[in-house]
Image 1 (cartoon, helix red, strand yellow):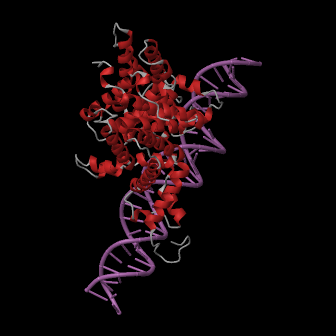
Image 2: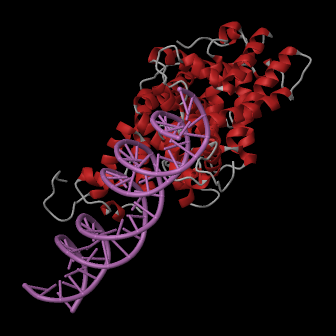
Image 3: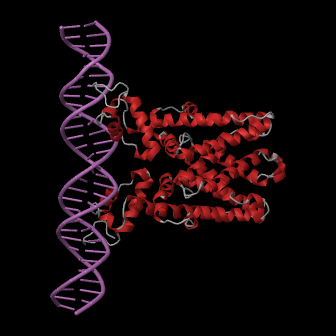
Length: 221
Length: 221
DNA sequence: CCACCGAGTTGTCACTGTCAACATCGAATC
DNA sequence: GATTCGATGTTGACAGTGACAACTCGGTGG
């Protein structure tokens, strides 16, 4: 893929556009992604992109896909580094780590993190069907990592069986919310030193909840 | 403020613009808010808005302010409805309710909920200073509600003193994340019947964590 | 050899945010 | 009461955007 191409045809315009899109999103976020600018960067005239993407949203979705696999890989690396002979401790530490890496990735690559979620609306309208939810979730790599870790945690006995259902959404919501607050909420001005204890507090809260004997607390309503 | 004004001057253009902005945001979200469209709606020519707002971001921020107080009021109403003779139970139920109402508001008014946070970036760059964080947080009504409820919970003895610091950010992150996932994440297709148990599971997780005796679970690292 | 069709191009339209210059009106001052 | 003056609205313009339609290039299959 030459920077200044000689032939009329580009060769691999789609990939080049996505790569340029990743650059823009990393630098200035998803909203700054403009089809025309990407075409300019790649050295192709405006509208060329429309041969590969029906509209801007599809291009954003393609970038989001890349962002998601990058995020998944970053998480995998750190999860693999954790080893513990005790399966229960191992599962607990892996749950911690998957949460930490989720927030860390959001802070390290805010543009990519945001685009990974900003793209969902268009995808949903595209692939219709009621049971398509599982397919879409299957694409969400970090979510699958979380699910299997929670399964380990349940098998090890640390997470009570009756608390397992829906736990993946609870954990996901917690770390996702913290990431969002750090990125675009009122907490965005915090330094890394201020943020880290909050992340640990969040993870500790979940850990303590799962480790609590269920009869310890009376039901509320 | 006449719909079709006769005089050259509008009278209260700023308020009219914000009101129109609220309408647009409710219907089509923050990104759809266009200065020119608002001017058109209000019956004033484009650029008139720039006498009251330096740029689009300031207008969005004004709409965000309205959204935030609306959200705060919705929460207050539901919090006031909760009464329990036992202070401990009361605090726990109020914590539940403030979380529920946060997510409920996000689902009932997705546009307003999003704009309340989409506006923060510009504000931060405007009001400089290191200790300005408290001032900005003071504006965030729902956050203050949460803080005082957590104080109650700590005073009642349900929440251990050592777990109190930072708890407001943990709770906020949890419900905020769930709201975001429901709104724009892969979970946006869920029905109300599917969402509700997830909300309850989240709140129960936090409640169980706070109710757990701290020595129950060994530290991780 | 040629026709076809995928891939890139040019041209255009409606829309946006924002700047600069101008018009109008109300209110304060003389 | 006439005059100035500043806040408020208006007109015009420019650059940028997404999207459509019509055109053109050139590699590939017949």
